[in-house]
Amino acid sequence: MLTRYRVMAYVTAVMLLILCACMVAKYGFDTGEGLTLVVSQVHGVLYIVYLIFAFDLGSKAKWPFGKLLWVLVSGTIPTAAFFVERKVVREVEPLIADAPAAVAKA
Image 1: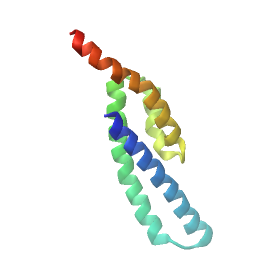
Image 2 (image 1 turned 135 degrees about the vertical axis):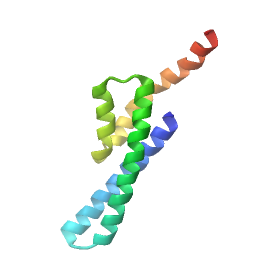
Image 3 (image 1 turned 135 degrees about the horizontal axis):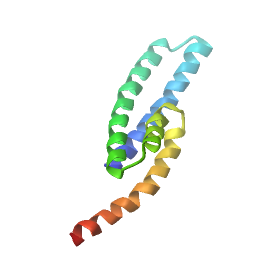
Image 4 (image 1 turned 180 degrees about the vertical axis):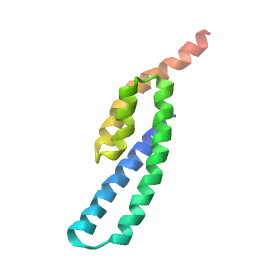
């Protein structure tokens, strides 16, 4: 579950940067209107998938609501998902490493 979250965090973040570049081209240079439409729709669909995976990870990691909300919103802020993803991985990896030991003891 952590891997799929990480993949979607990176894909969503990259697509958001591409969307920002398309928006600059569209509104700043009056070009690329069709491309901007396609990229925005693709980013929207990928963001929904990101939300599902992040929510699943957050519910299994038992994050408080504020932290879960910050992780979910980070997919809408350019470059934020890169930093949030690294922080999430550092916090969740020890939980995953401890899980097999807890299951073995039971």
